[in-house]
Image (cartoon, rainbow, N blue to C red; front, side, top):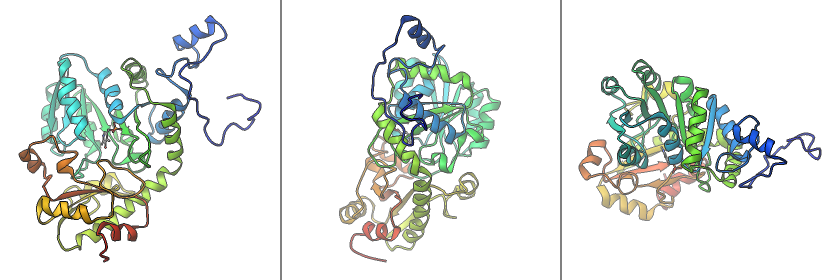
Length: 378
Ligand SMILES: *Cc1c(COP(=O)(O)O)cnc(C)c1O
């Protein structure tokens, strides 16, 4: 911005809350509306605070273009809708964020787009599903709540060979720990509501990619379907980016330490963390996420739901049906993220009645350990 009062620009990004901008004449408005000039005119299409946030995230993801949306779900819609038309197929992991699975299964299929869910850890099953001409392969870097890790390079290769595009929900890893676009994904999506916002005070999403040709249709979908992000939330997220790397690294190191402590705790029968050697994806996690295997971990209590209920009554860690807060929070997947499933489906996935999930924060981990177990100390 060439404002003589700020010859050095801005240390802190300015916020532009306007929903519309005036133009000096019809000719310049025409140019902006045609995209021939960079002028913004209406905030549902684009606004400077959102554009700045998108540009910063795109740099972090090492992408060619990006778009901020009003939520992580909006980012999923903005990315998938322009990629498919009636009669097309999407292949998706069978371990997805609950609402993402719901949108693919119940909403996208209204438009006669077929969606097939496969075990993304079974590369033969993925290859087979892609052989029936799919447009998109959709997976999460780290799944919820069992923290299965996707072999992104192998999946990108399979998608590429089948003429499909790999799209990755990178919400649990964040670009600090994994950059799917560098591993062959065509599209990356994040819920900024979680670790990137990091303070549970905003709702936003991001989608970006490597092929500049995708930018226009995604922007058009976001604008016409009304998936726009509000400037205030974007501004908060810009501030969150300043500490993102520190926060995610600290939280991930805390999770690794807490996983070890939990594994020694009586009454806990299983600890699920990709950084632990007993996790089924440990080797892959070390390779894909060398700087830390994330801030999410799960553990199982002997005694099923009754034990979980008693634990949640006593613990000082807040029970929250979300993740990515600055401090540690706990949730109960069987009644929250996996509530809509039948008991059999949950059992098949390994979401048992005694399973609790932690979103580990960046605070001093000794305090968390004390709070987690109420008054008792290790
Ligand atoms: C929360 C979440 C979403 C959806 O994001 P919202 O911002 O809540 O719309 C998508 N994927 C994953 C993995 C999530 O955790």
